[in-house]
Image 1 (cartoon, rainbow, N blue to C red):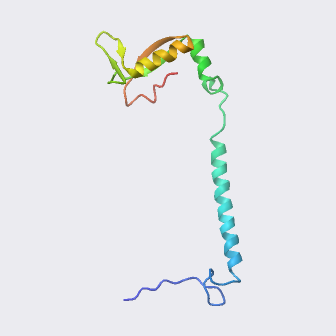
Image 2 (cartoon, one colour):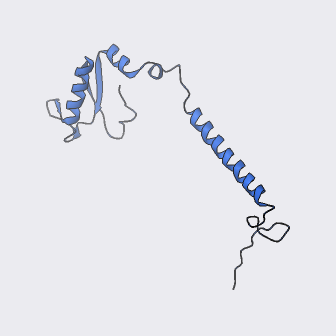
Length: 127
């Protein structure tokens, strides 16, 4: 059993790519498709850049919100050595904890560690 693939042909009997008369039409169609794709991508990228004036965190820079609050809130699970670990007495240690303490020190604010869990870490984001 032989399977043949039907190629679209122009009036001359040649394929569209082989026909010198049809080639400009094919190139123009490719150009229109490319333009449509670029317009869709551009529209999608600009739509994601809209601002939300109702959300104060979108308007006010993060560093200003931290300094106004007077403390840096750091979400941590406290169970991920050596990044962060919580002792039985409630003290945290680890190189992630040390980095957060240095950042708070440089900003000139206090620090508060907020206990979180891996499944809820993105919904409990603190700044």
